[in-house]
Image (cartoon, rainbow, N blue to C red; front, side, top):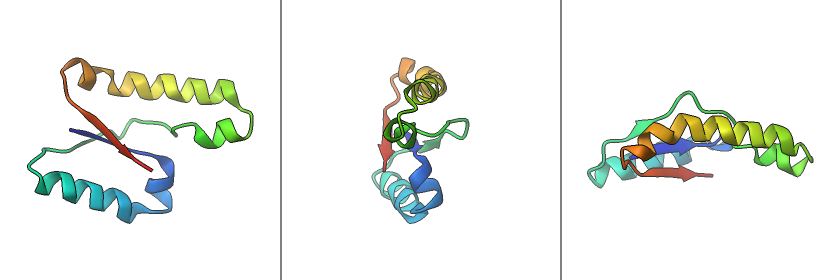
Length: 78
């Protein structure tokens, strides 16, 4: 599985991300962490920065697309 961690988890609650990875590994999954992702865009949307959020969404979709094409599940936390 691919684990998509958002900016909040990365900077404010890293224990959530670490726990998610441990849980997935304990369940027998090989976990891929995508490092070339951008912010999910949620903070931008809440401030009316829709175009910037759309650009980030596109960037993240591109970063995850090859995995999805291969049938690899993408899991995220917030």
